[in-house]
Image (cartoon, rainbow, N blue to C red; front, side, top):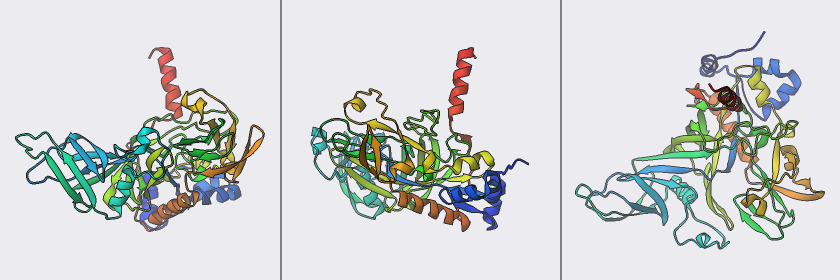
Length: 401
């Protein structure tokens, strides 16, 4: 008999303390022992996690009005420019924004980069942030200059809104050129000197729901140590692209999420300003997503292992910048996590940009929230576009519907 559960049924079990919750790592052994059907009967929720650099992140801030009032046309937070084209005292601070005089703007490799992501972390740590603003002055907003200090507690609202997070899968980056290059995948040594990857693999949220059977608009998530929500599909959302018929790889990137949450309830250990040598600044974000086990299809997806998940190996030298496709093959996350892979007959060391131990911690923390009854699942208002949606759309277009 087919197994079918509803969100209401699972939430009632959570409220009564009877829900069975496992992490995506823990559920693997259960499925190997009991099989998909029995595991789907026993388990109600599987939790996932990722802790990775996510450049397409930032925060909306509303400062409240000064006396006299100002309509900000330019603003800086600790010297980092914020976008002001919203309203009088609303700004958006992007995680990758740098000071206007930063050496990175002159293509200088440099060292530590203080950027928007670091300001976000400083706000969470309760530090005073220098706010500077300019205006042309109006009758209703006569003030032309403002210089003050703010803290997160003092401002009206701080809403984390990240347009593109939690990539479904990502490249394994290498460098075929004869010189060291500095990229958003870190420093890549010449002549296949190293390889960097950026995914939690079997714990990664969207690799555990590759067809978007449960994740959609309104899905409640762990975001930056607090509670957030999936707001929309993320930018560059290309879900479930099957790059190799014999390998369960969704990539090179696949689906993405736009996420939103109240920064004031988040924690600095889960939103960390990050600097890349020779590249710039970003924000490392902690995200955890619960997967309700509605049926056997969902259980089949969440029981996938690092052995079955593959990342495409991509040369980040001239071929990448010129967008010239270069197929260097695929490597499993199980191989990547051994610390070495073989490409073009050469054994090279690997290193992750995402933290698997932190992803495990996030999945475990989310599991505990659910077991305590502090976190209920939210049924999406609409599921996100999937690979099947794309196929259907193309079929309808061909038929002229």
